[in-house]
Every structure is written in structure tokens, then in C-alpha cells.
Image (cartoon, rainbow, N blue to C red):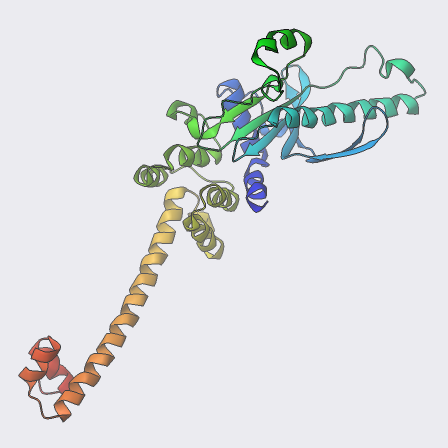
Length: 321
């Protein structure tokens, strides 16, 4: 549940939401502007056509106030693994938005005393289109299910008959971990870091070099690092986030290269302090041994030989140098 919520947080930002749509649906063209997006509740409470109360939760849904020549709704569903009933879930998500539109139009008609009765809506009243896209982050290719037919238990020899009888429902799955470099370069938002991480997650050196070379400004630093940590399970991203949150120079750490620098610098300082502390402990222990052996009447050379240290070190401890 925590991972699911974390992966939603970054995508709920209008600039990221629009960026994902423009890259994966429109070939990188800025068809959707973040200013045209309106936040919609992910929890839908509605009445079905029979008047029964229904409720359905989805990941992210936004209203697009200008998409071509119409108003529309676009939803994203984050999937870490393959879901074998995704076409049915997708149908449910879209149905709730259509049902809500119908409910609102019917209510307006009744308020204006212009009910359509058996028709439910008047001929001129049309619904706004709804599209849901699955953002899949898994490693394994999502080959099926991609349609309602893939979910149904129909023998192979009968599938041709049922294809003529059923209205098949297809879903759109975007395999994020399988995007080539020319696609990833289209991303203009913070999501570019996610796309690059998914591409190089198997090669730590390439991933590190890629993040090091990324000098673009990050807008949603904490949400980006949260999502990287959730997708990777790598605590280092969580550590970078913690260092960023506690940093007094947040404005100077606005790209991945600077964030890595900050974490490594603090890690180096931490290591130096740890090394100094360890060195002091060793020095105290050595001094005790030298003084004990000196009290036993052993010479400088004998002490140096047994402890395997230079004679000058023994002289400094004993104050005879």
C-alpha cells in the first residue's frame, strides 16, 4: 500500500501527468498543457443506472479541459506486476466516470424540469470521453491480458464465434521499463529520471553515470526520491532524501548530480569522523600497551619488535625521542 501511494504522488503533479501523456500518447508533442488539467477524486462515489450506490477507487484521474476539440478524462493506473483481470478493472474505472456524468446530467434535467424519461438523456446531450492507461513498471513483458477476450474462458476453436458476439475491450499498457533512449529523451519533467532508472536498473555503473550527467532542474525532489526508493527498494535514495530534507541549501540541490554530491560529501565527512574516532581508539590502546611493557623493564627495541611499530613511535609515547 505504501509503495502504491508513493508511486502516485509524483504523477499527481500536473506537469508530470501531462508529460507522460504527451510522450506516450502523442509522440512527445505538447498536446496536453498542465494548465488544462483539473484534479479529480480517485475515489468515485456514484449511483448506477438503477440508483444503487457504488464506490470504486483508482490511482489517478484528471479532467483535461482542452484535448483537441473536446473535454475528456484521462486516468493512470500504476502496476508493479502483471494483473490478470486488468481489462475488467479498466472497464470498471471508465464506467464509473461515464455513470457519474450521466447522473449529473439527469440531475440537471430534473432541476430544469426537462427530464428525458425513458431516453435518460436528450439526443443532444453527449458524454465526455474517458481513457485509462496502465503504467507498468515490471521487468517481465506484459503480453497478456491486453483485452477482455484474454480474460475469458473460451476454447480456442470457439474464439472466432465469440469474437463476433462480444464487444472486445482492449487496454493500453505502457511498459516503462522497456522504453528506448529516443523515447526517454522526450520527457521534460522529473519523470525522465524514473524512465532512466528503469532503463539502467540492472547496470549500476550506467545508472550512476546517467544520474551524474543529468543536470536538469528537479521540481519535485522529495516525491521523485520517494518514487525511486519505492520502485528500487534501494535505501540509498531514502538516504539522499533525508539529507536533502535536512539540508540548509535546498536551492543548490536541484538536480540528481548535486543530490549525489551532497550525499557523498556528507558520507565522506561522516567516514572521516568515523576514521578519526577509530584512530584515537587505536592510539589509546597502543599507548597503554607501550606503558605496560616499559614498566616491565623492556627496552624500546623490544617493545617496537613485539608490537610491530616503528621505534620513533615508541619514543614519542615514552617521551624519550
